[in-house]
Length: 260
Ligand SMILES: Nc1ncnc2c1ncn2[C@@H]1O[C@H](COP(=O)(O)OP(=O)(O)OP(=O)(O)O)[C@@H](O)[C@H]1O
Image (cartoon, rainbow, N blue to C red):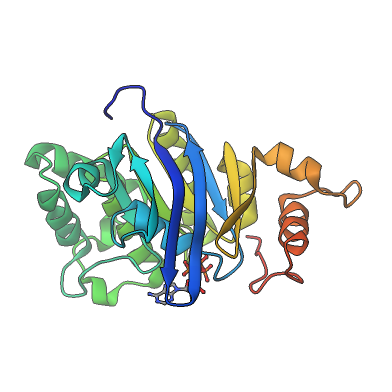
């Protein structure tokens, strides 16, 4: 990452409007490197739009941001440092899992020997070795998700943006995913994690930001957020989330947070 001591993510007044809709409104936040940042919010809060701006897929209407020390206005500088797992993993049905990952490694200019080693090790970790030569069109949703995640971190980016990484995974695979995210963070990768599965965030996140109607309405470590909730003894991240989003004008959530 350059400069060496840069924050992983810094945004200043980041805003995205679509016509009359303000999807993200003057978002100002910092994420320290090597941390897991849990990015929460009800449906339509602006999480995907924020990730699309930070990964240079869509331009902000206003405001600025730096990712891994590089301005998001300079796509060529930013993209080598980031990985992104969007809600739908970008994979080709006609390739096998292994071919997809080799293709991704080629796009990222990973030396062939390194790529082969990392691909084998991650396929094994995610229990995909046996199916690695089958075409992705025959994969389950969870298997596609695994390929999508491996693809997002294969080049060992400084910052990985993961949108619902445990979606479609069975309990064992979800456990592997959580362990992998924790390992990557231990190795100084910054993980920007968006999910509705609050126990995953509670377990992994060093810091949490709650977005509501495009605005960052709460930020803090999980314990701080939980202690904000005035719901008696049974204070969970879910209680805190529901309270914070209710305070900001929503009766409950559009999508209930779920538990594994
Ligand atoms: N391309 C677009 N054109 C018009 N409006 C959009 C577009 N993308 C997002 N929006 C609007 O911006 C707002 C934020 O959407 P966004 O997808 O970022 O929310 P989200 O927090 O990711 O939601 P979810 O949890 O449901 O995935 C919504 O009102 C949405 O309808």
